Each structure stands twice: as C-alpha cells, then as structure tokens.
Amino acid sequence: MKILLIGPQGSGKSTQAELLAQHLGLSKISTGDIFRELSKENSEEGMRIRQIANEGKLVDDETTAKIVEQRLKKEDSSNGFILDGYPRNIRQKQIFDPGFDKVIFLKVSDEEVIKRLTARGRADDSPEAIKTRLNLYYGQTVPLLDDYKNKGLLIEIDGAGSIEDVQNEIRKAF
Ligand code: AMP
Image (cartoon, rainbow, N blue to C red; front, side, top):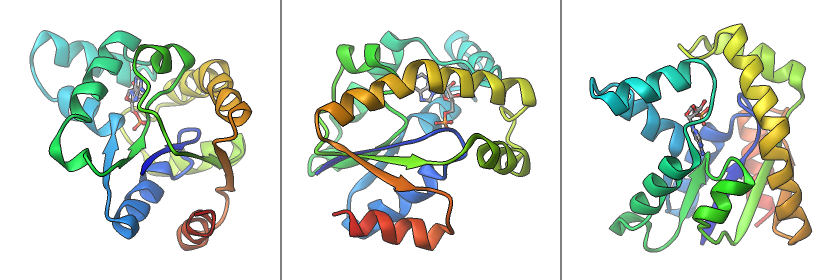
C-alpha cells in the first residue's frame, strides 16, 4: 500500500507517519529527512539545500521529484511505503506521481501550528521561515489536496488531539 501523509508544518505528520509505518510494517520515507541529510554535506548542492530549508522555501520541483523517484526504487519500498512530504504541489505530482492508494490529510489550525513550531525550535523554525512555509502551504499544497479530494483519495483527520488519539483516528480510517 502506498500512503501519503500530508498537512501543514507542525501538524505532526512525521510522528504520525512513523507510528503508522510501524503499525503497517511499511517503511516511512520523509523528504524533509532526506534534505536535512543532504544539507549536512559541504558540497555545492548541500549548501544550496541548507539555505533553501533555512529560509523555509521549497527545493526545486525537478530535483525533489528525481530524489523521491530514486528513493522509491529501493528494495524497502517494494511492498509500499508511507511518504511524508512529497508531493508538496501539483507540479511535483506531474513530474513524478507515486500513485497513492490513500492520502491522509492532518488538519491543524494556523494558531496551533505556530504554537507547536515555536516550541519545537528547529533551525528552520524562525518566525520568517514559518511564515514562508505557511504561505507556500496555502498557495501550493492546498490546491494539491483539492486534487486528491476530487479523486476521492483524501481522508481528513483532525490533527489537534494527542499523538495517540490522532494515530487511532488514522488507523480507524483503514
Ligand atoms: P519538512 O520536514 O517536511 O518540514 O521539510 C523540511 C524542508 O525540506 C522544507 O522546508 C523544504 O525546504 C524541504 N522539502 C521537504 N519536502 C519537500 C518537497 N516535497 N519539495 C520541496 N522541498 C521540500
């Protein structure tokens, strides 16, 4: 089974993807994790990605799509996977579409997102970067959600509860 977990920054998608992956025995693949690893490299690409991530911007669609396509060819994804963070917009889906069976959307308000991210304190959680990511989310990711909704793939989950409650809601949806 191929599952996409999607939601705004701070919606808990990474934590929920991890728990669901353990439950279903699937591998969890996160583009955020992949880019954080790449950004540690002192190569030109590493430095470019580091700057983009710190500003809260998106890595270009071609590079992102290529990385994900390569990653999903690995043996650990042959039975399916839980993808956290890709696609983030319609263009990425057009370049490479993993062909999901289900799309789980974690819905969390802006207020809650800002509260959680301020507490998280990651390097790319500056107030400016948070604002940029929220703008990108509404401008690019929400239209993608509408697309999945129209295709009948979208499962909407209220992401405001505790980690356990949200995970139970997700599992019930299967
Ligand atoms: P995340 O952990 O999902 O919040 O991702 C952290 C950062 O990695 C983002 O702010 C982007 O800079 C980059 N990133 C992750 N996924 C994507 C994607 N699908 N397209 C472009 N950039 C991405």
